[in-house]
Each structure stands twice: as C-alpha cells, then as structure tokens.
Length: 592
Image (cartoon, rainbow, N blue to C red; front, top):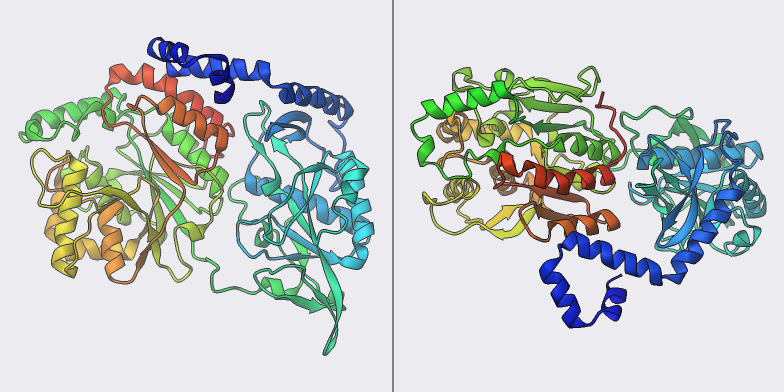
C-alpha cells in the first residue's frame, strides 16, 4: 500500500498532504490507490465469486458428525480468497474441537483405525495418528469430506509448520501432500461480517505412523516428536481408550460443550506430565464507572473531606482514571477467546455493575469493596493501589490467579504456562522502562512513587536495587505471597489500604512488589511475551491500532489513557470503539 502511494506521488506532494490531512484520511487514500493498482486482488475477488457460487448450496447440509454445516462465505487470507464457514460463536478452541470432530468422525465412518496424539506443545493443532499403510483410504475419505464441507489441506514440515493451504475440494491438492509425513486439514471459520477469520493454526493434523519391527513385536513409529512417546505397539487397537477432547484441543472454557466430548487414543497419551498445570486459575478485575452520578457524588464528597487531595499529583485523581468506555466488555471477550482455561472471573467494584453484564452466569462474580477490605472504615476508596492491596481477601479465589486492569487485552491464544509454572511459580514481565533511582519526590507521578516505595522495601529485605518497571499485562499472583506481604509490611500495607486517593506513600503490591518479593524467595521468575502499550493521547495511536488489527500478532496489549477528561470521551471513543469491536466481534458468555 505504502509503495503504491509513494510511486504515484512525489515527495513534495506527500509532504504537503501530511501537513494538511489527518493520518486516518491519508491511510484511506493510500488504501484506495493500492486497491486500484492491485491486479492480484482483482483476481482473488473473481476467484472468490466462483467459490461462493460453487458452495452456495452448502448451507444447511450435514457435516461428517451429522450436524448442520455453517453457511460459507469468501474471506481473504494473506491476500488470497478462501471459502470459510460462518460461526457466530467463533473461538479458537471451538474451531480446533470442531476440526478434530470432523476428522475423527470421517475416519470412524470409513472404519479406519486411529488414535489422538498429545502434541509437543499445548497450543498446537490437535493431532490424529493413522498407519501409513492407510494413507490412500484416509485421503480419499477426507477429500470427500472437504468436497461436502469446504476444507483445505497442507503439508506439515518437521518444525510443525504447515505449507500453503490448498483447496481440499480439488483432487490435485491431495497429490501435493502424498509424501508429507503429516497433513493439516483446515476448515476456515469466520464471523458473519468476516472481521475475524480463524485458519490453519486451528486445523487438525493427520500423522502417518510407519510400521517397523520392534524387539517385542511390530511398532507404529511417529514421523515427528510429540510430548509423550515415539512409538506404540502396532497391535494396540484393542488397548485404545477414550479420553476427553480437551486433552488434545486444550480447554474449551465456558463455551457451549461440543457433542463429542471424548476421542479415541492410546493409554500412553493420558498420563500426567510434569509441565501440565492442573491447579485452578481465576481472574480478578477492578472496575469503576466514573459516569455513575451516585459514585461521582461519593468521590466529590471524599475529595472535599480529604485535606491532602489538593497536594497530590494531578494524575492521582484525574477523570481519566475513572472513565469507562466498556473496555471491560472487550477484555472479557479476549479472555473468552484466548484463555478458556480460566475458571472464575471476579469483578471488584464499588457496588457498581455494568449494565451489559450477565451476573447470573456461574463463571462471573461481582465483589463489593465492602466484602474484601479488612477495615471497612477506610471506604469509600478511589485509589487503585488500595483496592489491589485487598484482592487476596476475595472469598473463594484460587491460590493462583491473574489480575487484569480493564484496559488490558489478550491478543492471541495463550496457555496457563504463559503465566505460571506447573510447580506453582508465577511469572512476571519486566518492562524496559526504568524507575528513576532515589526516593520518591513530590513531583513524581503516583505510579513512580509507589515503585520507589516498593524498591525501598526490597532493598531493605534483600539487599538488591531493582530498576525496571513492569509491563501493563495480566499479573500472575499468589494469594500466599500477598498474605505474606500484608503481614511482613503491615504498617505500609495498612497505610496504602487507608489512602482514599493515590498517595506518595502507596505501595503497588499486585503489579510490582509481589513479583520482586516472590522472585527473591525463588517463587517467581521473569518471563516475556509479545506485547504493546498504546497511549490514546499519542498522535500515532490510530496507525498503531490499525496495524494491530491487521496483523493480530501480539499476546497482550494495553490501551491506556491517563490524561483525558470527560470532554475528551467522544474523540477517544471514536478511536477505540471501532478497533475493539473489530478485534473482538464475538460476544462472551458473560454478556446479556
């Protein structure tokens, strides 16, 4: 797009346009010019029309499992037209389960023996193993399936990376995967408006295991490594067992349960591995609706009664800290899409509930500040540091949990291992941004003052000086560690809980002190993930959001706002609302 724009316009013209035209308008202009020049895109549109006509009668047909196939539509994937099934409840884990179901059912109908294999990593496509001798029968059966329900096929290399997706409804495509040790079969799925497309990463791999002689009889040998065994007895069909689908697809979460709840496997693949995380993981959000007049009156009264508020930093109680743009709704959608392994969600509020939230859902719990503060006399509070100091008091909360701000979003499928080790250690994510050395000063922003206060405690207890801030990501926390912090630093902890507005004396327990304290006790480790921080006040925010929406290549992103006022809401809403709806178009089960 940019190359076409630069080819058509000289530098002087581009500079003049940049001075007079907004980033958004320039982007639209470049897109229009690029589209008009892109002959390949025109060809793909024509190809898409042909695909649409070919599968126009697919809607209403039954798939291999006997269920009604979703209506197909044409989508562009890497600039190429593909036919995709429309799924109004689209999720990555649901797509994997559906692909596995289609493959297993097709093999069962043909009487072909198979067993499901645990992949080497927990975020891989599900794997079905068949004997290499059955390759031709398997391909014939799957080719027929892809002709009825439009699917795609690709060879998979030894690094478990699939090649180009070829139309499985075209006979010649199967000839191109005849010699690959594994084949990925994919049914592209999309939302009704085509804004979200799930493709090859959520297909199903067919591995062709070769027959070899072993010391105790014939063996089926895997074409590539998996997480458990390299070979199984060839005559082990009678030893097959049924195991939960989720062992091979990953957890399915609170989505509607599929008709197929178990699949065929070998006993070797049902064992518990050291890296398996079996403990429950909950999520805690803190949330406030600053537009609520009742809450606003409480805040105004507290500000008037607190003689120290006027001396606080301007970021301690500004409007941006309490503005709500329904970010929580979309953060919960991201959780539903990309972390179905979460057990319960706890929403901590000042007796407020979002109008769109389905509080009857068994996985959501609204918790009042009154239920968790050790000293109710310090309420009401408008200090996030104070609220975070009490999270471990939530009744029923799991020992291991994630703390989210509502402006933090998951951007891709993640596993529990992203945040925890199976032995219970938590992970934290240091930022390259630094905490200035020295004690806190009156002019320090509240977040910097709290970080310096945390550092003073770490220096005193462990004789090290940390300099890095933490990324704005979900914080992996341990209730036991938080309880220890409350006991060990009782005076500073109580002072933080009692500060109704952010104070220069605050600790930031959940987002920083927990991590450094646990690290020095060998209970936490630093880690990394693909991440970006977006500030709504930055002039390039629109461009960064467009790139993020186009690529969807980050694990976590934060869209933060620390300086806006209520008057800025219309401008920032116009920026963030279309992005969030485009990135997370599928409602979560927590919505009415």
